Length: 170
Image (cartoon, rainbow, N blue to C red; front, top):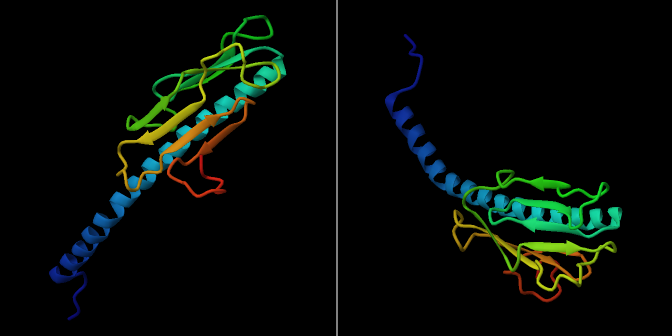
């Protein structure tokens, strides 16, 4: 007579293997998710700054990018007209972020002039945004920095890269 099914030993061995694999895979997966959240927030801020610059050129007006403390941002005109509204677009913090993602900046606004450069009449403006995630172990964390140049160019870089000539370096 043939038996169908698994023996108790086969089931225990299978469970031990699953627990061992899970104990290795789950932390790596959490690290990957945390670093992806950092990248998502940094790229969102970069895209918002680039969109604000493009809107300033398109509308031939001063356009302001405002960064909130929780990674949310909005774009609007400095001087409101029929062609240039107070709010052009915005991004909420819940889009691609988490409570563990931290955004810190040297200032919360950047104003772009009609040529797409940072407005020289705004002396204190956003130039550096640092994005990190406290959920990720510091040795495995890929914190990123968004840099806004005076000419309006925006760059996402890795502050931990120090090799001269590396495009990832800040």
